[in-house]
Length: 307
Image (cartoon, rainbow, N blue to C red; front, side, top):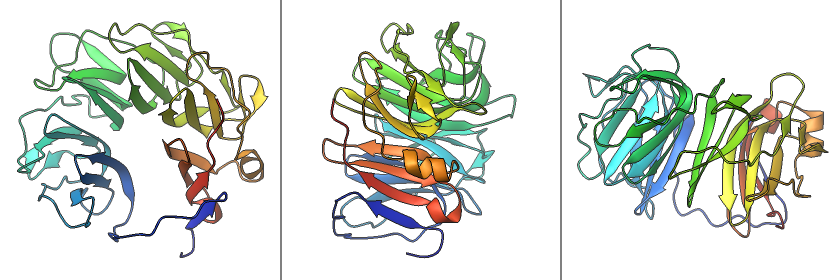
């Protein structure tokens, strides 16, 4: 593993790698129906669809003219967002969709008409796409949406739901009937919430869940993963629920009570720039993609938290 890339295993043996694609700067990944989708940050912001078993190209997808930073796949469609202004030579202002079977660009285009910011996270439920980021959308008759929006997956119009966070949204995760969001906000839906919140997916109502993220300068939650009754939070913070937690923590999915799990406190104390920017969790392992100085940038594997 070359300079600036490391992997840390906490008693785990990494599975054998059956294939690899050598591509620089992978911003976002999605796994759906036997395929791995990747959004890249290269000269042109490429969008890849690979067979999960072999790594070969599953379908040819059009290129964006700049980075792809968020992905969601559902209903036979690949939805994506980024810094781009065109996709396959056709105007698409930071949001676009292509047919997953043919790779054909769809007419769906909830344009960021203000041209400021872009999508940083996406998740889909039924016919609704949830997007978080630094954008301002004004598409349809429901007014503008800053940083967090629900978008009709067919028409591209924003829905009436308007949570109005006062800062960027970096993470959106749907788990059952709940929508978890994380970012740099301190209020959302008119209520105080420090960088993490949860909504009822059906009603759009903000729930009381509040883990109490704290960092004295620029706190943020950049990644969320949910496994059973545990919610994992990654970002830039020093405390959760009044307890010392260095940039990675686990809380109860129902009560938001902080759990004893604290794998990164010593690392984040020595290098506060070691920030988890993506998380994945199962009942046997938690995987964190960590960005920071070259010495602490890479992938870390941790044992899961106990509920």
